[in-house]
Image 1 (cartoon, rainbow, N blue to C red):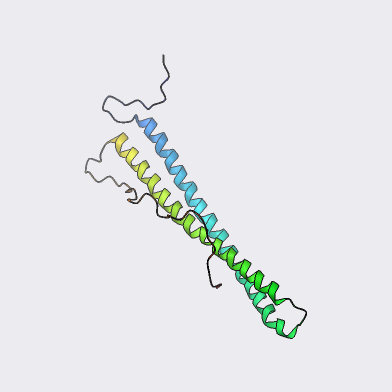
Image 2 (cartoon, one colour):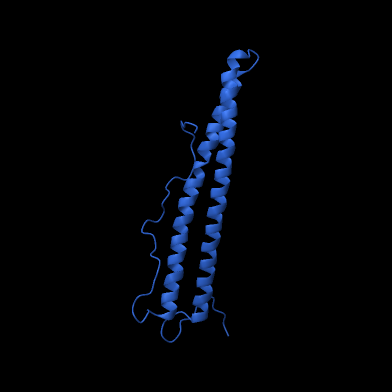
Length: 153
């Protein structure tokens, strides 16, 4: 008997119920993983912003005190503040990543809903609740972070 990896359609042309349920389960698990990733990114971003804010405050205070301390290298402080500004710019990655995660979540959810409708047929009242797939293929067109001028906090 030949082995065929493609799902076999039942007599009505619908996906077999067990295959559809398994696919739907995998898609919903992926959406749950994306939700968890979204929360992890948000928590990490929040923590980093807090640390950056604290570091910026300390650097600014040292820079202002530098006038009274001739041995203090104000150039090094300015470089440290520029480095911190670059790190904050990189944190914009979290916003782009969040948009991509939400977009992918909606797309996977729409696939899971469509599989359920195809496997079980349309609701007798025709009121099957299905997530609509996003119309745009990608909400974020940028694929790299460039440092620009940014004002800290």
